[in-house]
Image (cartoon, rainbow, N blue to C red; front, side, top):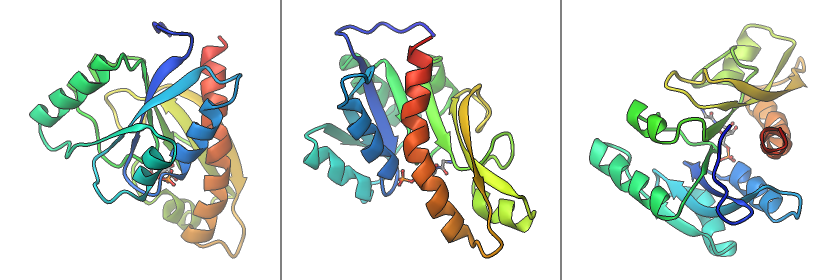
Amino acid sequence: MVLSTGSNKIKTAVFISGAGSNLKSLIKFSKLKKSPIIIKMIISNNFKAKGLQYAKIYKIKKKVFDFKNALSEKKIIHELKKDNIDLICLAGFMKILSKSFIKNFKGKILNIHPSLLPKYKGLNTHEKAIKNKDKYSGCTVHFVNSKLDSGKIINQKKVKINKLDTPKTLAKRILIQEHKLYPSAIMKIFSL
Ligand code: GAR
């Protein structure tokens, strides 16, 4: 992938909608010497996203947009370009980005998804895996293209489904793996 790094670390924006535990793990990772990224901006579609607290804690710029129309996306693109953002990490971001937004950051948007893609794109992945009596579920980090949860896979982690698992207990175990998988995906793409 072609990226202009500017300073020596890749300026990154993380998009969130909720709790932000993946955001927190990415922030912690970004502070390691070996990390190729620096997180410059946190963006959310949700004023009430709990994860926005990390902007304050870690002194990172935050912006909230409703993502409802082309104008709002235009504003976001402007913000991102103004700060020379060269990588976007979707981390529990529950909005679908428009084709034109994705085109503006072609090859520079990553997403983490709580299933072993291509299985279970979209929502309610844990319910689906349990209902289908799968032995394993897991998580995937992939590049974002214009089709939902369909871009090139970077890495995946399998998690065993236990007999007594509920969507909630499974989600919790997978989330722990997500926190390791996202940093390792970033290490992988930038050490190529
Ligand atoms: C994570 O499990 C993430 O994989 C999932 O939302 C959760 C966010 O948790 N993302 C999606 O379902 C995207 N389609 P977090 O806010 O604590 O990082």
